[in-house]
Length: 340
Image (cartoon, rainbow, N blue to C red; front, side, top):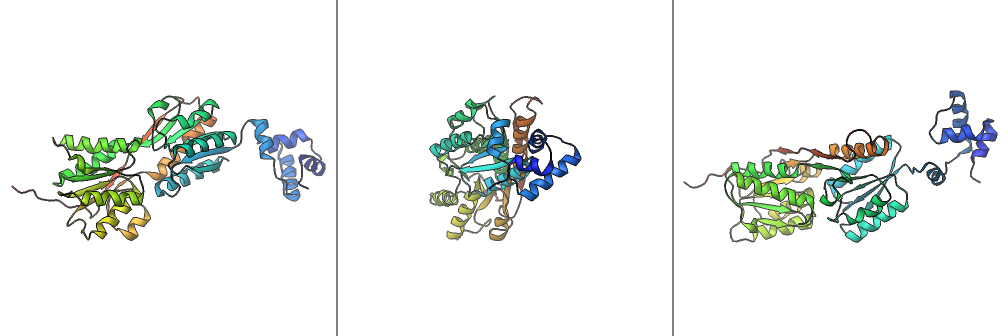
């Protein structure tokens, strides 16, 4: 039979109130603390977290809803985020909705029923309707990588400056003499897709020109999607002289398509990808890449949620934190000379 608080009281000679205070994070005398800790160890006592959550209205858990667990960018953010939350005694429950709006809504409902203290979401549903159960329950929410207009003032968010990221990459190629620049984007309705397209168009406008509409290809943020989008660009009568791909998985797929077509980078086509991860170094060394601060994103998300959970009175209740990206120049782009 599992040990109870009464067993700890019998072994230590302390009152239930003192033992309960310690087990719920309160301060007790050092001598009593040592007695309780020894008894907990010897009796192999396991606190009833469910009962504790009912009493304190805290489960010490955080729910995370993501579109794809297999996405390297997402998993790297979760890792750094979880490290910080664990240090503050919060466990993390991760739900993969597989980029399906119904699964996403079901995941949020599940986490609300699990009485999570906070919720982190990288939204698939662009309306934000999936978060309504958490909003109704008064659960603090932090969005990661994407912001939804419908939730302004209701949630916090941590995003990167996607417009600036795409502007930098496209401007770099335009300055290198390329004016036929293919752009491979994610799902058309998603915040990051819209912002990266905006940055691409801004850079063209800066040079007083417009890209051909056929150069802009929407995909689904997967390797297969990047492969298919690159194949479509290469099938055009006038092929692009450079391509900018806007996420990690699609970058891998696009590079595979170039290898299959036996096109040499950068001699026959210049290339800029997204997110520098270890796999790139092994398979496609020294690519020119837009690098997102993945660890910083995870850390900021965790800190924003902890602020809402513990000290929401410091500063505006809901904040949108925007982080910068870097353009790391490699050897996958070249300067081309236009005919005089």
